[in-house]
Image (cartoon, rainbow, N blue to C red; front, side):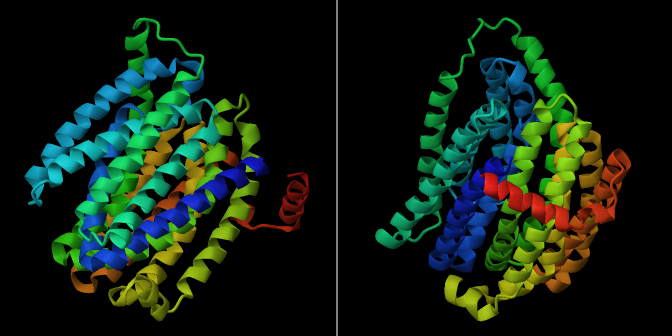
Length: 419
């Protein structure tokens, strides 16, 4: 297990570093306003992708071991096309956008959706190496394309991000098709396709509702800041959020392996002890990383990103407690998703949203981006408290089970010697 975790962590660390490069490039060379515009576009794409998951998402991973990938792909692609078209039109109706914004949104949302679907199917077949390679390539191409345009060609407009993204998602998408073709699955002429589509829809609705609500918890503050402030403030906020959330590569690396193991395990209860052991070490690592991040002085941020971004440090400080709490949240929600108890995750994110909405409404008009960070952190803390309570009821675990002890470090040393 450790080798798989370390491999996922290394891949995600590389991805996080490249993502940091993307944040740095857009902030340094487009300024706070340009970075804010890019962040809003990325948030719009992410919103569309969430609704695409209502007929796909993690349920593709769940069903892939026992279903033809081609029978899963057809309904997922059809739904993605419908959602991207309707969602793009809705964005155009809800707020004024720049000329050309909507065509880029539609095209790039589709590319991301198809790539996400293909990647999920590969992961469901335990093609973790291919999955990590393709996702790493995607981020690398985006970072490289932006560097070429912004630094090499001195082309410093928001549109640069769109064109770099076409290459970054288009190439891995083509390669993902090649990987799918290598699987032994056969197209059976549509036989059983309706039943597979219904099963996918059944699992996706329950599994993905929590993701939609979680997105609202993560990014609703962006729309409040865009409304009450401006693109410059949103750009500063997005840098602070990106740096803080980069730490989640630690729990997400372990949770990915945990989820795949749970899906394939015949005895789900036997996975509780390994989950708790990994959760303890994950929480410790996340806490240390958060403390290191918030210790960075503001001059470091202005040196790296530009003079406008020193204000990102208070954002990170207020996000810190919530980021630590989310390490526990990610592990517990992965456990409930792996055993098919999606309702618990849905309730958890509903509670988080119930905190996010009034907190954003009350705090952002007066406190600006610091209020946005505080609102987000409060949401994370509230949802994690509820989720861990449900986890303790389901497994018999307690708060003490999150405190690492000598046995955990001995286990880690043993695994390191074996790897």
